Image (tube, rainbow, N blue to C red; front, side, top):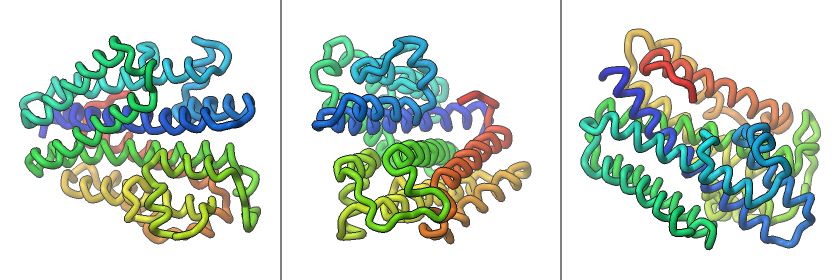
Length: 320
């Protein structure tokens, strides 16, 4: 496959996944902001959301003070924000259009219709009237895009690069979410050797972390107990049967990388294998004892390095 074609497919899926992840975080933060809480706690929630995407400086330069409605506008439809849902869906559609002949008709029509319908909803005021329903629509369109892709594409290199992009982006986002949210809610409990038993933090905030990755019902099914932060960390880092966990994402990345491996990708494949093995054989007590923030920071550095390796070995070099 031509590197330029692989590049467009890889980034099409990454941008679509990024739009969904942004909608997930916005939706949960919006619902949490409606709960009775202090103005300081509400502001901290919105500031944390900007921090996950490393957009705090850009937002403050444009808007100044942290305000929930402005943060949502910035993250949804601000054209100056390259990580806004608007920018992500546009980039996904443009990448799909560039490789129209490689995609099935269903995949292209889904991408194109998502972009057109998104703009119509913005013009009609659907976002302003009901942000929650709007975010659910974005999530649904991403699910639809992923399902149509898996259900209609030939299982060749094109599909493999799409899957690599999807799960690399998902793993990166889950790690960022965990790092920011855990640090904000209970950072003092997760330093080296400082895991306090019986930690109790507001149930709604822990459940919000789980709901942002569709993990609340899964947590209840797996642990059948109260929500405990160490188990949340275990579920979202180490369990391969949790679809948005770091382990599950790296299993998918490695499996698809093996299917497209070429003569120059040995080092990238080795790095992916080591990262996957660390997650497969890791233990939550060891991670928490050495520091969750340090572990997630290292994971993010390694997965970004992996992305650069994939770009170098297979794709046209491009900034995220």
